Image (cartoon, one colour):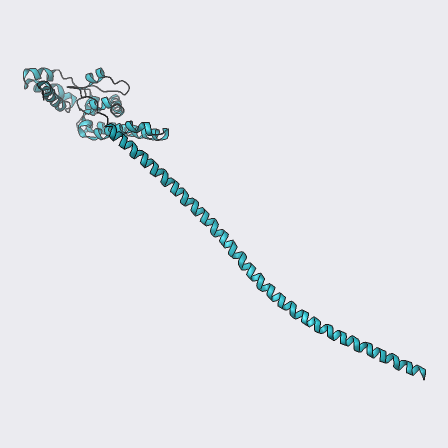
Length: 282
């Protein structure tokens, strides 16, 4: 490490410690630290500016560690946004806003624990700065130093603004993920999307199969009912046919009796006629 880098590192460590103090204690602590440093470093420490209350609250949040996780998540979302549809982007945007609001509330709580109450305007500045860190990689790098002097706002981020907003040296923006890692994440995202679609189709196929099974069961029930009815009718028909055969046999027997009776009646009539004629002749 060269002398300049070493000097910057020492200044940044001192600045981070000073910017963790409540703003009301900053100036006295800074001057005391400058007095205890060698002349070259003392001049740099003496030049550190007192942070605004909102910037100090964001510094507390950065030191607490929660902001780093949020910035990392947001960076991943920014890299993935080209692969997302409008609905998914809208959902993620809503989640991001909720995250920013929650972090801003956490920063206000940390300030309150340190004995400092933030005004409504300071709370608004705190939330805007956190949102800038979530939306912009360069702003995120500046905020994560925990050495903010002034607040930031998304859409108004440039090197000059960032240099003026940070006490001590200004870090570069967080490097984007290597292309291979990004490609791997996108491939994994595509695979997950394909898996979700396959699962959706499988579920739809299962539901369709269940519907078809229900229709098949109903049709089978109807077939079974009709077949039972046919069997009943066949048994009834066999019984009727047997009854018809018996009735026909009885009819034939009665017909023969009728014929025999008719013959006897004719014979008796003929005999009666002859007897009458004999009687008449006498």
